[in-house]
Each structure stands twice: as structure tokens, then as C-alpha cells.
Length: 314
Image 1: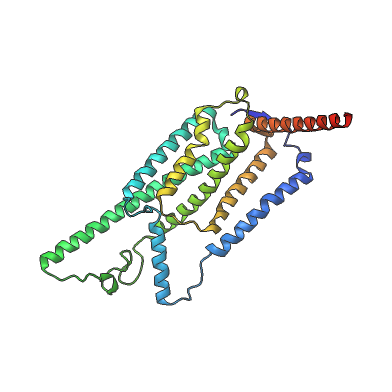
Image 2: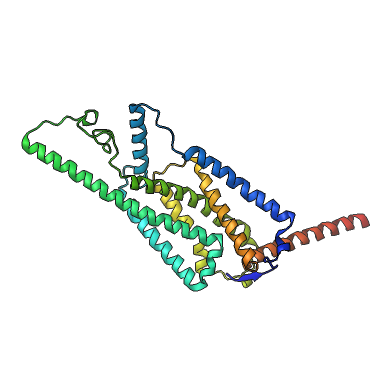
């Protein structure tokens, strides 16, 4: 991951041209649309619904909170997803630590490292939420078992359909007043976790597909450092995230792709700020790929012109 210095980006003349203006429009316009979508769908609505509608919304919110740590299939125990996330977090954290130790903190100038760090944070938060859900389920099961033993000893009759009664629990997660037993802080972290899930899904697909499809085919191996850490940085996060996607039960509201657009736009603005303060630098691999692609285009044009000259000569 060597750096290649090209033009001086600290001069004012570098930024005062139509290309920079066009890039700014292409970056800021999607960010504005993303802000509008988040404002439209994420803002709290007025409390104008009936008690039954409020209870239905509360149930939906609780089921959604439950998705943060519950697998997609009932046959898979939540502990399996918890162990998977803990192992994935440890692997990503070790790979990230080794990468930073070998190449230094300048790695965080690049979108790949931003994405890798974001995936690491996602699995770290997922491990904590899975542990929270696992402990919560155990407490609820213990309470139910204790209640059954207590009522059995007293010889009381327990109705089967207790969720319809006013003294029972509604849906297993609501108290007799229809209020959530899930703390507001837990609901907030679950909401953040789903946002991270959709941000990492878009960022990982973007970085890994661009690297393996666009950049890597045009690299010359003798001039590029293809190490194990480089391969892990562009594959391990995708593999682990696909496994978590197959196991978890998170839904994917499409408007929240706006968070990924904002994440990418913030990175671009960060890069502009860095380049305005420091000389322009980029991956040597990217520069090598661009040069190789340019040589390929020039060679194609030369062959085309040569064929045209031969036809004219004949």
C-alpha cells in the first residue's frame, strides 16, 4: 500500500475549475436527497392514533428490537448468532490491528479502511446486543419456570391463552398496561445497529467489488504489494457480513440506504479537506490500474488506426 504523489492539491488553482464543481454537485446532490429521505421517514410522528393503534405500533417496535439478536430461523438458538458475532468481531479486530501496526495510521485516509473499521464496530455492537438478548431470554424463561412451579405448588389453574387477559403479558414483551419492558436505551442501540447493518452492506459491496473487478485486473503483480493483509482487507469483511446476513432477522427498509450515501459523502468531503491541506496522494495500486487502463485504451486506438490505414492502403 504505497503512496504516490502526483499534483499539488494545496494550491487554489487546483480547486478552481469546472471538474471540481461537477464533482461537488455529484457528491452533494445525493447527500441532500439522503438527508430528505431520513427527515421524511425517521422523524417522530404526532401521537394522534388510538390506544389500539399505539399498542400495535409498540408491538411492532418490540418485534423489531428483538430482531437485533434473534436468528431468522426458530431452529437456530440466539446463542449461536451471539458466538458467531463474537468470533467475527475478534477476527476483524485482529486483522485491523495488524494492518494498522504494519502500515501505520495513514491507512485511515482510505475508504477501504473506513469500511473495515465500520464492519468491526458493527460486529462489536452486534455481540453486545446478542449477549443482552441472550441474558434477557434467560431471565424471562427463569421467571416463567418459577411462576409455573409456584402455581403448581399452590394448585392454581393457569389459563392457556394468558396473553388475551388483562393480568397476563401481552406478546411476552408488554406489561399489563401495554408498555414495553425493553428499555429505551436498548431500543436506541437496536435502531443504531440496523442503521450500521445497512451502511456496512453498501460500503462492503462497493469497496470489495471495485477492488476485485475494477482495480485488481489492471495491477502488475511485480509492482504491487499483494500481501495477506491486503486480501483480508478486501474479503474477510464481506465473508463475515454475508454470514451474519444469512443468520440474522434484520429487515431492510430501503430508505435507510441513505445512511450509506451519507457515509460515502462524508468520506469524500474528508478526503477533499485532507487534500486541500496536504499534497495529493493516492494508492499506488489505483494509479497503476489507471495507467494500465490508459495504456490499454491507447493500444486499442493504435490498433484501430493501424487497421484503418491498412484498409486505406489496400
